[in-house]
Length: 291
Picture 1: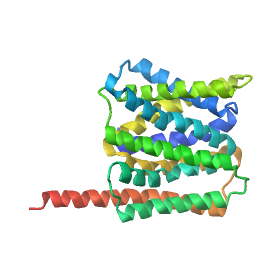
Picture 2 (picture 1 turned 60 degrees about the vertical axis):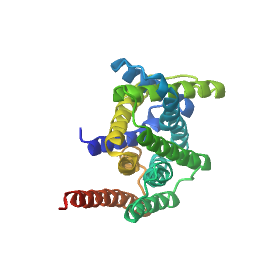
Picture 3 (picture 1 turned 180 degrees about the vertical axis):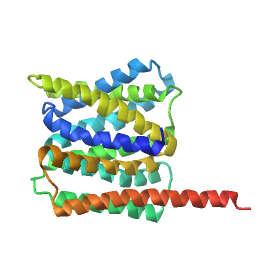
Picture 4 (picture 1 turned 90 degrees about the vertical axis):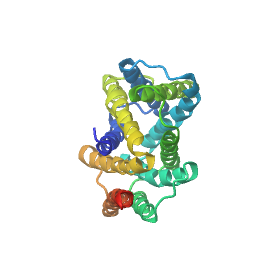
């Protein structure tokens, strides 16, 4: 599959997670994060039975914690405390964070036009948040920001370290397993366990672990492996757009006029970022083939 298409599909599927969290799942964020990680890990590791080399165990622990452990835990705290579209819009800041984290870790100095593209998206985020008619919980806001920084850092480190000599699905599965163990221990220690799970919860948990975790993360990591974290990160802008559409269609929560302007700016940032990348590649190819 085309790497950009894979990243877009992954981001759109992640946008469904917010509506699923508030309709078909129990209100226990750490429990949900643990089930999501462990469920996704089981699916992938059953499909691909591979053991990473011992030299990679430390790196896998770091990547599993950043890409899925911290990300899932903070993600569900935000999803249960904020409207879906508002919580999701913070993921649109991932490209901006990725650019500057990559600058610090990889020494990849960004082009000014690319920074401008992502700042345009960030402006869209601020319009969505500030014009929200709902009360915004500060814990939810900080959790959303933390989840964004976590996956941005994890993506850059994947770019730096590459992947172990095992199939990509196995690499993804081991990261999810590490996160699942971490989150299960935290959920047990904090007693964030639902008192009962009704049939609709079981359906929601199954969809969460398979359709919205195992598949999208495999697609996302594949795209990072092929294109790099900085190139892939702007596709995170599709997450809030998906969440807003679902909020409107399913819950009747329609965005305000300013929020629609914000979403348009977010999408404009994505388009501008991809055009900047295309121009840079064309320039590079022309210089390589120049006689």
